[in-house]
Length: 128
Image 1 (cartoon, rainbow, N blue to C red):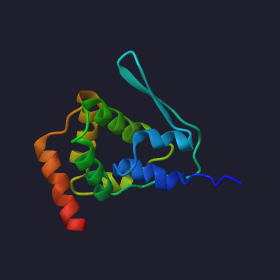
Image 2: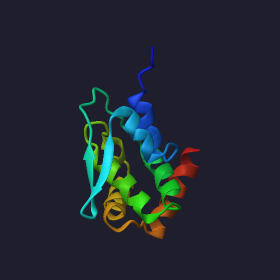
Image 3: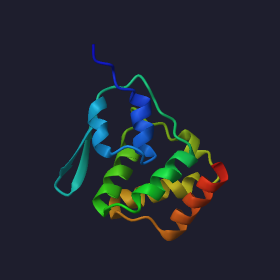
Image 4: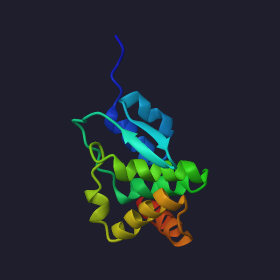
């Protein structure tokens, strides 16, 4: 019998940049590109992942070194998958607003400012 994929672990792994975006298909999340923008399709999840600023910082650090389109797609996923991702811990972090704003910018522009990358490094060091 085939084991069911761990929705929370896969979602968090993608947020942290530890797993490729293509891994999301294992849990029924499809991200396609249509007319220059992304479209997200997913089922209903009975699990919500609540990433921390640390988790998002790891993802920012990893995805800024990748192609612009991959960064855009990742940011779009983190912001758009409200069924499986709860951003409340990030929103309540002292630098949460800066991180969320960076996600919006990344989802549209495919870039993250140097100051945000430095902040992500700082959050990573503080936690690690």
